[in-house]
Image (cartoon, rainbow over all chains, first blue to last red; front, side, top):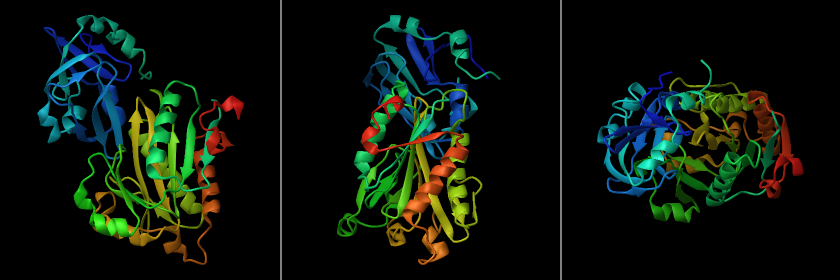
Length: 127
Length: 231
């Protein structure tokens, strides 16, 4: 199971990539594999302000809906519009084209509270 | 593993109450205040739309629905539109799946097994359909499935038609499956031979224990908020 070293993670299986102060967020390869083939994605509005831990998005496979949580507080500055027509991108490339949204953090210090790759790997079942 | 709780409701539970009850139980389960818990209950007549619920699968207008006493609710579960009502058991497992257990596929498979095994107990030959969720018999689909994960704690679940008024399903295109027949134990076995709701509940309880490999403790609805040690 892929767990890129340069990302931060949450216990609820979101990843965060710090891109010059903006944080791109998606769900991990493990999360997408557990949900199986995704068929529907509900993303937050651009401009919405979110607090860490808020349920701000939903990903849905054939019969399972699962919440996605804001890993950090801030403002949603962009969302991945392409997912509405192609939610399978999350399955195919969860750390790349399957990203969900970008947050402008209100407190960049919150990033330090997230898990690093090693700590996140520790949460996953042994392969 | 600590025993799981199994709670059968004697009285129909209105859909919104079942949703808020599940919300409370999911929070309690997340906080490890309660063990895994299975709810088995019936709803008063209600049509629910999944989150991507498309109104075009609803075939009746508001007036018709009101006259027939059917409420409509948007649900946070996965899946499309479905009907719940008396004569149909719904099973809502509140389980903490954790990282080491089954994902959506495995969980879906387990719910289907509960439906198939229950049907088998009453001599009904039942099967899965590739690429679709639920359980079928020759006469049609008798069990629908739609669930939700909240940080990998499950809610919503499975419905199983024992002897509901199947006429209500004419109001919808069930789970968005155009041209699918809906069935029930009564339709397959005939009115005379259809088992009582209680007998089916007992069979479902047994199937849950076997499929999920749990020791089950029966509790009353009023005890749901309590930890298992105080039962």
